[in-house]
Length: 285
Ligand SMILES: Nc1ncnc2c1ncn2[C@@H]1O[C@H](COP(=O)(O)OP(=O)(O)OP(=O)(O)O)[C@@H](O)[C@H]1O
Image (cartoon, rainbow, N blue to C red):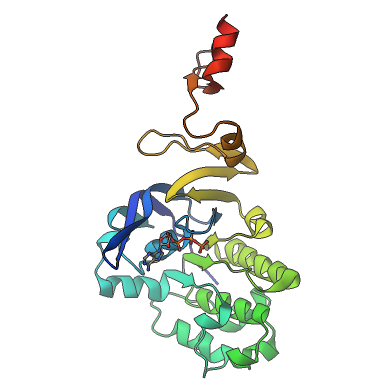
């Protein structure tokens, strides 16, 4: 079973939905780099733009502006036919709700075979893949409607991985699967990443899934608000130079607060200290 993970690079991505005569800016300048073979969770409040970002990376929709590079390919420049081919064997999107991703009148085994059909490179053996992702023999013989939500979700991820994609995108894979189901889903994603090297990008509200990914990126109001590496929360400077503050800090420093931003006075190194203007004045006095 050999697959190589694909990197993702998103630059100044803007997406505007045009509906009923008014525009909704779902993404307003997202910069994001995902290393090949890594795991990442996109977090953020409802309506922040997470699913939009996922579907643009999957090539389901085209960005209004900005660039998307998957592996070596500028996917925002591909034709519809080329995007279909990309999704056929290199990039897989697993939508929220496991059964939605499965052909209802086929067994899970037949769904796996269908997903591998026409794939140009070496796709993983379906039986080995099912074993790897913890999908039992009896599940392979069933139809989607006969599965519990957690089994349907595992089956959907397995079908998503069947073509041996370098990038697997999963929208809320642990939603509505219960605690045991979530553990199995997380284990399956880890195995996929560890054994096949697949880059795994998830959208989630689930802190357990987020904690199981190597990195988290929080999207707020269509922009990258913050990132966490190995549990350390980091602010991200936006393309326009603005710096979104974490929610707990915003409670103390609401919009309109005046701040001084300085270099570390002792070292002059680029260690930015943010302090409210009043406090700074008191210190000077
Ligand atoms: N097809 C569409 N047409 C118009 N507006 C849309 C469409 N899809 C999403 N939006 C709007 O774009 C914004 C971002 O939506 P998106 O679904 O990407 O957010 P999200 O962070 O994934 O939210 P959730 O966590 O609730 O799934 C929201 O304001 C949403 O209402």
